[in-house]
Image 1 (cartoon, one colour):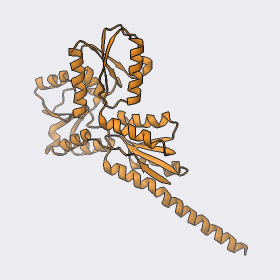
Image 2 (cartoon, rainbow, N blue to C red; image 1 turned 120 degrees about the horizontal axis):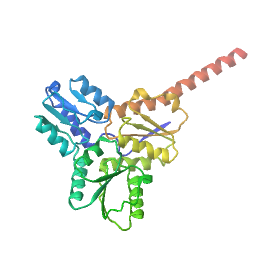
Image 3 (cartoon, rainbow, N blue to C red; image 1 turned 45 degrees about the horizontal axis):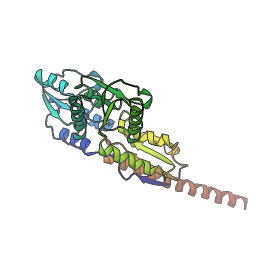
Image 4 (tube, rainbow, N blue to C red; image 1 turned 60 degrees about the vertical axis):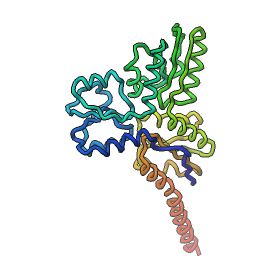
Amino acid sequence: MTVIKAEAMGMCFGVQNAITKVNNITNPHEVTIYGELVHNSEVLKRIKDDGFHIIPELNRPYLPITEKILVTAHGLSHKERKWLVRRGKKLIDTTCPLVTKVHNEAQRLEGLGYTVVILGKKDHIEVKGIIGDLSQYIVVENVDEVYRYKINRLGVICQSTCSPEKALYILQRIKELNRESEIHFTNTICKPSWDRQMAVQNLLKTVEALVVIGGKNSNNTKQLVSLAHKKNIPCFHIQTVDDIDLEQYKDFLTIGLTAGTSTLDFTIDEVYEKLLSINENNRIKEKGMIHKEKERINMLN
């Protein structure tokens, strides 16, 4: 069996920057992580073990007991930031610059008189942060949710981890149903997410199955899984090497490997080595079968 890695995969600079800032904090017990630093179970366990306080994303807005609050890579609305500061909190900002770009573009379009349409997940923490500063907005997850809005000016942007293919499909539908509206589209999909999705599309042309490493609630990881499903290629979404059942992979000759933007390098290495061990296991089994066959022949003679 051959394991082929995607040309672009794994941790992006935004996640790495957030983790680096956390690692440089000397007194973790004095800081509250305001949500999930990144959507990676291994990272979250590590920072919890280090002594950081953590506020679940579903509990926000929430006033932590610590003075210092760390804003995660997924960002936060200006409105909520001000709410925290007014209550005496000091913010440590690890927002990904490419997420900040989406925030800024949404506010720019609204300032120009557009109603902002966000292509993304309604319940995702990044989207919640973006719409938190808008007076009017529409969030569209799927093409079936597009309507004739009867709005003169529509400014369309994307969640940073949105699928490029899906975004263009939804945009086309918006244009079809709103021909009388002025529509301005800004592609705010982040380059790391874009690169990883393009790499998977190329990888799927050459493999029989795909292994995707990443958090179960990581949107960019789910997009990679979705690409395999669309091609009807078996896909295994795992978080760590412990999730691998080698029996599931033994019948494939070629397996593709990729990972979401919050996945640690050592996790990728562990999974890669584990998948390669299938070949060794198969060789051991073959030797055992050959040995048994020789013993059977000897007994017959």
